[in-house]
Amino acid sequence: MKLLISLLFIVGIGADDKTYVKQFYSNGNIKEEGWVSENVKSGYWFFYYDNGRIKEEGGYNNNIRNKYWKFYYADGTRQMEGRFKNGLASEWWVFYKNNSVMKKAEYSNGKQNGYTLYYNNGKLAMAEKYKDDKKIGQWSDYASFKRDNW
Image (cartoon, rainbow, N blue to C red):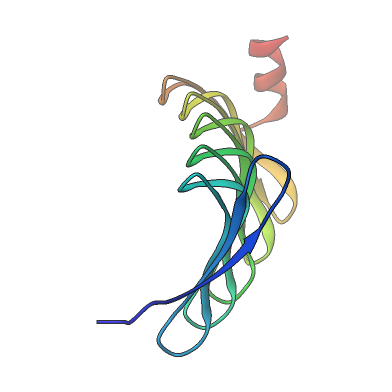
């Protein structure tokens, strides 16, 4: 079992007192850090792997993920990034593999809704369309995609 060590910094900001919190792994590396207001996460937060590399970063509002978030693999390379709205994936998300764009996907209310574009060596290779996480269309060439969508 790993022991977590917590460190608190109290900072007064107007009428809304906030506390900057840092938690550490037993090896001394930081686990997470960010602002807490009235015992809930608020503002920008950072989370780390036990090797010290960043795992994810983004904003909270009342303990709920909001705004733009970035996620990383344990080696520090990008994994994915996108926007949360009320704790659910929203709008366009970008997914990476070997530090290159693997796919881009549209989300609303935490579900794939809209297009998902797949890339191979930086070039568009395939497109799919989703509604409520169910695939409703697929195209493997630009001509058929254009024919069906314009």
